[in-house]
Length: 459
Image (cartoon, rainbow, N blue to C red; front, side, top):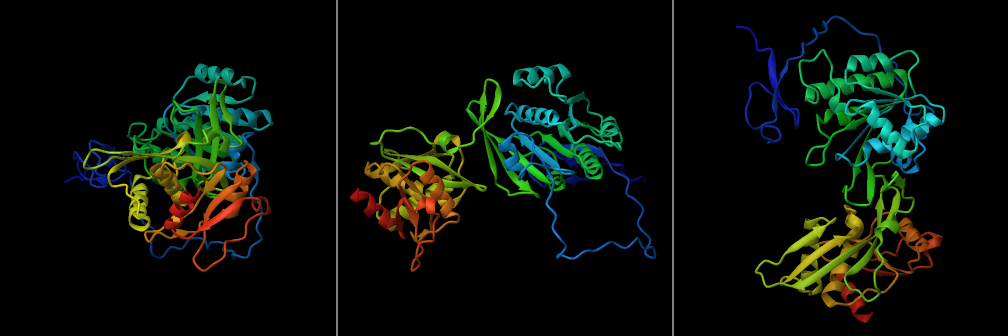
């Protein structure tokens, strides 16, 4: 009996099934299995054959700095770790219409104007559409080499040459296809094979490669996760299309720090850099408003100040509502439980709303102290002092735990005109030394959430 020459692959997680079924056993998604031809396996290497020995080196080898290529967009270069690396591959994803192509076209134009050879290959738009966007951005005179194609064979014949370009953009990887595979473009097999060949060409020829990726409804880059392991950097372009800002966040970078962000403002002429994100996320509010506290957070290596707003109102329902925007809802439930158990505050019969002004999402536990201050201020209807910032992690016993990079947080606060800070202090230990620029702040150290209530009642 002949062996089946095809199998079924989940387009969401890449799990292989021997027969079709409605639900994937790997990720639980429905109607994601697509039939694909089996790839022929290479012959096994004979046990007696030996390959050429590898050249090994020690860990004490001299370190040479990685050469960089600047894109001319400082926020983009920051997320990349100081610019593009020759022979590197980067994957950037984001929602449709968020501005991925606009950002990359601007970077390509800047590099082309600096004398580098740049290829922009698109499989989604026509040349006329790219040229129209270039005129809107004012970069139509940049010597960017544009091509509209989605056949991998023709693309490799253009870039995999003895005289390759310096920078190549593929927009997008889901539209590329290899004629050697019997599968539709965008499937797991096609995305994996096309990405592998393009990255191999970049490593071999030494040009910088950027792959644009589509995202799923959950915000993850579509296709197999192995592509994220193959590339050197993975960037996400975040933000609501109706909002005024965009955030470029690095989640993986072999040549720089992860969790670094670049902030952009979407204007009439395209994306504009925001060198001081704190001014974007801090709102102008009245001095007598309660329930608002400024949090000094860290996004990668950059300190960013943002305002956390809380609203506490009586509720007539048996289960009061808890709603958050830009803050972890489970973290809010934990903070409310700690405040009730350790600080004798009552939130059980109150509706609680917590919002991060400006639409930014906070992921670090250092925001616990600022969120607790905003909640206490809203419950007691007691405004916080003007010019106050706070940061610290709250434990289940009510203790305030110290966080990292306190000196950078206070330095940024002092630079923006804040003159008071509430920060954690480890039990039995003195506060950590801070930068000279932050010593002008009137700092107040707390060890327990009960001290927050007592401090606020005295203000």
